[in-house]
Length: 268
Image (cartoon, rainbow, N blue to C red; front, side):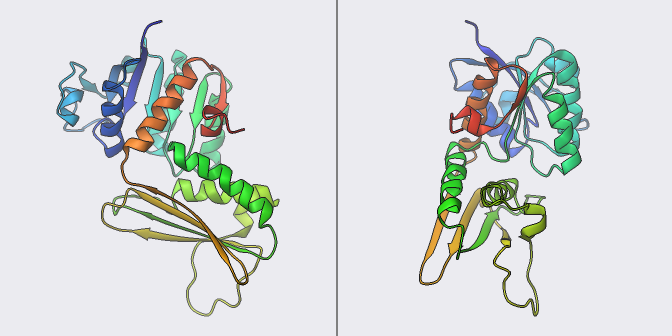
C-alpha cells in the first residue's frame, strides 16, 4: 500500500508549518502539494523552507492543480477559503480534513452538503486530548445537570481572529446537547455593568487573548460547596497537527460522509 498523498493549505501559517513537520516525519504520508493564498511571498518557494528542511515541493496558489492525484487536503485557513477549496475537492473527488474555525450556520451547512459527495472530517479542534475532554464533558454534564452553573473560559494567542474559540463553542455545544438546551439561546458571551443574578439555564463564555498562548480551555461546573473544573492546555501546535494527520489516515479508508474527531478516535 502506497503512502497517503497529502496537500496542505495555508502552508506558511503557524498550523501549516506544524502540518509540514508532521507529514515529513511520517513514514506513511507523503507531501503531495502545498498551498498559500494568492500574492503570498512564499509562492514559488520550497515548502520545506518553512521548517528548514527543503523537500522539493513548491508552494503554489492553484488549488485545482495541487489537488490532482491527491488523497487528502488538510485545511486550517479561513471559512471563505475553505469553502472555495472544498468545492474543488468535491469536483475532483478529494477528501478533506477541515480544522478551520469561525464558520456560521450557513457555511457549516455547505460543509454538510459537500459531505454527500466526498469524505469531510470537520472538528473545531483536532487535538486527541481535547476530543477526549469533549467526552468527559458529556459525562460531567449528565451527572451535574442540576444545581451547577456552567462557565467556559478560553485563552489564545494575540493573533487569533475569532472569539470565542471554535473549541470553546464545541465544548458548549456538547454540554448544551447533553442537557437538552439550544446553545444559541442559552449562551452568554459577555457580562458588563449591572447584569442581575445569573440565569441558571445559561452557559457562560469568557475569552482571553494575549502573547503566544497556544490554547487553554477550562469548563467550570460551579455548585454550592464545590466546583468541578475540566481543563485542557495545549503547549504546542504539534498536538493539533498530529490529530489532523490521524484524521487524514481515517479518511483514507472512510469515503463519503461527514465525520468528526469522535469518529476518528472511536469515542461514539
